[in-house]
Image (cartoon, rainbow, N blue to C red):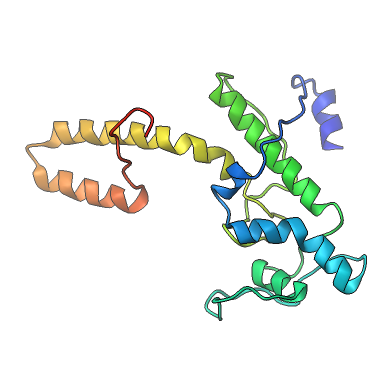
Amino acid sequence: MVLAQVRSANLGEVLSPRAFGLEPILRVHDEQFVTFLSTAWEEWVAAHGNYDALPLNWATRTMRQDRIPAAIDGKLSYYSFDAGTPITAGTWRAIQASANVALTGQEWVSNGEPSAFALCRPPGHHAARDLYGGYCFLNNARSPLKPFERQAQRELLYWILTIITATAPNLSFTIALMSSLSLFMPIPKMSTPTS
């Protein structure tokens, strides 16, 4: 329905996404969490049958977190932050397709396209490193931005150095600025252009 509207509005050519595999996803998400998402439906069907897999409760991260439950019911509850986001037969396929759409949009922009519109469902904006909920499984907002981080850090470092140069007479301001910025973004090592 949404895709039909996009086409009828003549927003531009609709292209298929490229398959990226798990590597870009694992830059943002915990590997055990991704494995859980990829096998949850099969585990659920083996234990309970062919109907929506929903957690019995959801994780409170101040509770015991030193081991992942063995049973699918425990895993659903461990990895979810709500009890209303089901895992079904097509969930993993939809998760992968959505991630590939977002990553394809990122790739197009990285390769010089002035913009890209990546229509993703499930969207992913609620997903955390190792939690799903709100109909979001993988963070399709975060995964595509990961490759841009190094460039953004370099550009930030350039502006920090510019500010230091301009404010060198006021050293206390410069130190305070550097301290506050380091809380939000680690300053990368800049030894080589490829580091």
